[in-house]
Length: 236
Image (cartoon, one colour):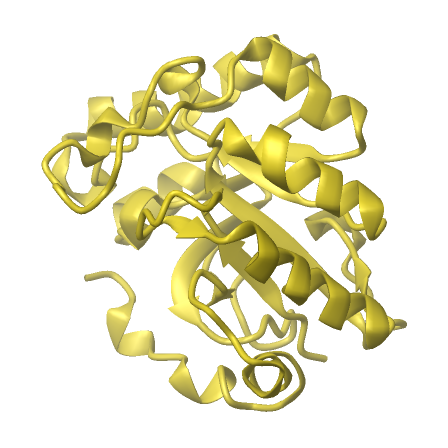
């Protein structure tokens, strides 16, 4: 069983490298709907339905509420957004050294409430979006464990999933995540096979670029992405 897990950041026409154009994003949704795909959450993975997919958004940009959520509702899909808990209501200042990435607003509490009330979920993307492999153990514990605590206080629901900032992890990071979450997502490339992949090293499919319907077919229905899975990236 291979489940496509889609990785997005922002849905916007602002030409930022993090952004997927609104029309392009809708094209992806139309393709999925026409091919009878159903969106699920991580705790709903089952071998019964071969046309499931999981949709994820990293960072929690405010444009998900204005540009993304209406389209998800239009096509009856659901998604998980990974939030940087100390940046809620602020900006993506972790990207300020990258001149190609625009300053973008992050969801505030009211935006998160709207997201959840419309059937979506959230996960943790740490407290401050730091490179977790570069910090000491106390700071690592704070970034991973306290992000979960803060988000659960904010929404009143359990947070079960984590997404590694920058896709960076090692054994210490993974072990700390295991203490607090049920699943963790990486930037490793492949469709997700629960029988093959560790649930704390879940691969995803990057959907940020413009994709033809044929490329969507390759990514979703064929081993095209699976062949890119590179375990050499693990623990670097």
